[in-house]
Length: 195
Image (tube, rainbow, N blue to C red):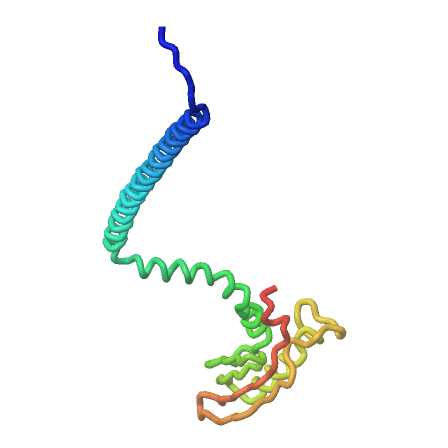
């Protein structure tokens, strides 16, 4: 049987504590090294995965660019789509002249023809035309002044006249063809409302 006598207990305890500290330091060093290596490995895996993913995405983008470049009419189609999107805005702001032409047909006497009609942004119409006689032109001007107030489908004295400031100008004799005239007037908004 072996018996150990501890003649210097403080020295023995100090050496045991030193061994324990060395073992603890070694264990902590190994653990820290393992964690560091693990972090490096995971980082490399993530970096490699990102590179693979970016390469796949770049390849997909290049394939789609090649596919898009094969469509020769793509620019025209995109422009047409933009025009279609703007169509609703244009349709909402357009001037409706269907009422104007109906009123012109209703009040222009037979023998009066408009050859040119222009409208500015203040709804002032300048009309150039031909007539068989001066009487027909003045009859036409008076009918325009009276439209919607004294004559017309739903005329009433309280209605706003369709045309105001009717002025005849540049009346000229065209010989055997009758006369030429220019008429200027301001339209009410009811004429261009499209209703």
